[in-house]
Image (cartoon, rainbow, N blue to C red; front, top):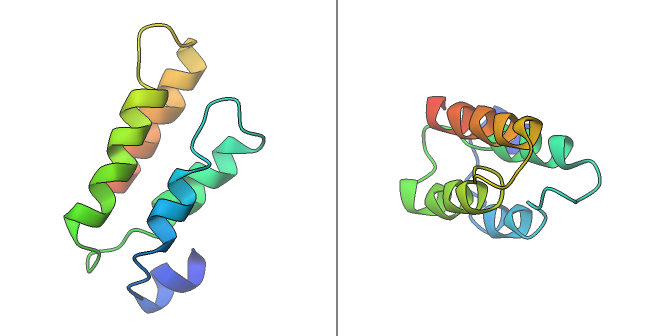
Length: 83
């Protein structure tokens, strides 16, 4: 993800790959979410990022989750949208 962000590469298959591992019960989920947010840059088309945000909203930002899980999801969405 650092190489993608630094050199602004368009590796559109990376985002669906990371999306598979965006589950609250996944080990080291914060590292996965950080790398997903880091790989987004200005040249990535919005339709490539939209499924990531939808997955975050469906799995992390829901009423039945703990406050920490919701906070992690909101912070990741905020970081993705800021980039």
